[in-house]
Image (cartoon, rainbow, N blue to C red):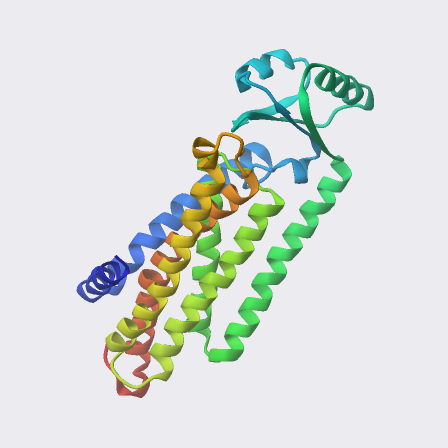
Amino acid sequence: MEVGLTEHLDSFVKDHSNRQLAAIPLALFLVSALILGFMLASTGSPVKLGMEFMGGTQISVATTQSAEALETEFSEYPMIDARETGSRVVMQFGPMSNEEQSRLTREVTSAYSGVEIKQIGPVYGASLQRQAVIAVILSFIGMAAVVFLIFKTLIPSAAVVLAAFSDIAIAAAFMNVAGIELSLGTVAALLMLIGYSVDSDILLTTRVLKRRGTVQENISSAMKTGMTMTTTTLAALIVMYVVSTYSYLVIPSFSQITLLSNISIVLVFGLVADILNTWLLNTSILRWYVTRSGQRGRKA
C-alpha cells in the first residue's frame, strides 16, 4: 500500500508545476486559518479549550443511563458536555461556587456508583494556558534556529518552518470541526507534529540541496524514505485510535480512553497534512529555489 501511494504521489509531483503543487496545501491552510479565525473571534481562543485550561469539574459515573438523561438530571449545574464511554458517562462542568460543587458531589455520589471526580481551579487553568502558549512559541523558535543553522539559507529554512506551522494550523482546525477540545494531551500531540514535520522536511531539503543528481531524482529518493516513515507511523496511530476509542465494543468492561483517542486522531490528521505540506508545498518551493538559483547547475 505504501509503495503504491508513494508511486502515485511521485508521479503527481512530476506531472504538475510548482504553482499547481503549492495551490493544494495553501488552499487547505487558508481554509484552516479561516476556521481558527472564526473560533478566535467568537470564543476568544482559536481552539475550544478543555477543562485543563478553563477550570471546572469532570465527573465519571458507572450507569446504564444515556448522556442525554444525565444532562437533564443535572441541568441546574453549568454542564458543558456529557458523553458515553463504554459502560460509563463522563460529565464536564464549568467553574462553580464551593457550595454548588459540594451539592453536586453529594447528589452524584448518593445516586451513582463508581464515581470518579476530577477538579481543576480556573487560576490553575489560566496558568496552564500560559505554559502551553510558551511551549509552542519556544518550540517554533528553537526549530527555526536549528533549521537555519543547518541550511544557512533563508528560503529553504523558511519553507521548513512554514510547513510545520501549516501542519499545526490544519490539525487545530480539524479539532474545531471534530469537536475535540484543547487539553494537555492534544497540546502534546500538536508539539509532536512539529517534530514529525521537521523530520520529513529536513530529509527532503537535505537530499535536494546537498546530494548530487537532478532535483527530481533527489525528491523521489527522499519521498521513498519519508513516506515509509510517515505511513508506518500513521498505521500505528490508526490502530491506537481504534483500540482506545472502540475497544468497549469488543470487550464491554473496557471504556473509551479519551486522552489516547484524541492524541491519536489529532496526530493522524496532522500527519496527513504533513504529507501535503512536505511533498507538495515544500517540494514546489525547493524546485523553484534550486531552478532560480541555478545551484550546482542542476535542473528541475
